[in-house]
Image (cartoon, rainbow, N blue to C red):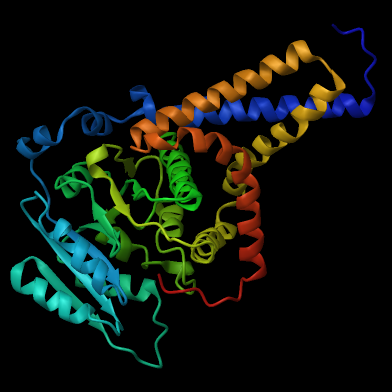
Length: 393
C-alpha cells in the first residue's frame, strides 16, 4: 500500500486533504451534532425541547411580561397578513409595538384598524426628516425606548410565528442570568431552486450559530426571531460602536454582548417564525450581501473559525478528484472521505428534522458543495460595494 514513491508536492496535497477532512469532522462532531444531542442542552433548553405546547401553556410558572417589537416600512400587506398571528399569542401579559418608519403605503391605516381590535397593540410613528438617517436601527431604538417590559422579542413585519406558543416558548428561557434567547427564523417553502437554496442557507446559518452558542461561543442571532433584555440594551449604550452601520442590528449586537453564561437557545418547532423568501436573484443578492457585510467586524479568532468550515469543505472536494486520479493512498483517503461525507449527511438530515426543513435533504447534498463558493462570491461583493447605501430592510 505504501510502496508508491510520493513526491513532496503529493505529500503536501495529501496532508492538506487530511487536515481538511479532520477539520470537517471536528465541526460536525464538536459543534453541529449538539443540535440533536440533548446532553448539550441546558436544563431550561431540555425542558423546551421535551415539552409539548399544551404542557407549556398549562405550566404553573411565573411568566414575565414581554414586549414584541416590529419595525415596518411600507409593509401594509405583510402587517395585515401576519400581525394577527402575533397579537393572538397564547401569553398572559404582552404588548406588540410596531414602529411605522416613514411608510408611504397603507401601513398607517392597517395599524389603526388593528389597534381598534387589539388593546395590546401600540404604534410608534417616525416621520421623515432630512436631518435623520432613517435606518432600521433608529426604528428599533424607538421601539425599544417605547417598550414597557424588560424582555424584548424581535421579529419582522414579513414574519409570522408558526404557533400561538411562540412568545411563551421564547420567554420561558429567561432567568436572572439570561440576557439573550436565540430562536430560528426560517422561510416558507415555494417553487424553484432559489427558494430551496434560501431555505438551506437559513438552516445552515442557524445550525452554525445555535450550536456554537450551545458550545459557549454565541456570536449572532437573527432579527426574525431574537429576544434580549431592554436593560442590557441601555446599560451597554444600545448598538454602541456599530450604530453607524445600517446592518448588524442583530448579529453584531449579539456578537458584542452575548457569552456562555447569559445566552440560551430555543429549538422547539413551535417557537419558530417563518417568512416568505425573496423570489429573484437580484433581491437575494442585496439581502445576502447586506447580511454578510457585517462579518468583517467579528473578532479575528471568530472569523477564522467561521471561515475554516466552508474553506476546508471546498478544499476537500477540490483535492479528492486529484487523489482518485493519481491513485494516492486510496485505502486511506477513500474511507476518510466517505466518513466525512457520511457524517455530514447525517448532521444535515438531523438538522432538517429539528428545524422542520425535511424536504431539503437531496438539494442540501448539492448545496453543501457549492455554498462555500457562493458565500465567497457574496463576501467579495459586499467588500467591493462597501460604500453602497443598503436598503432599510
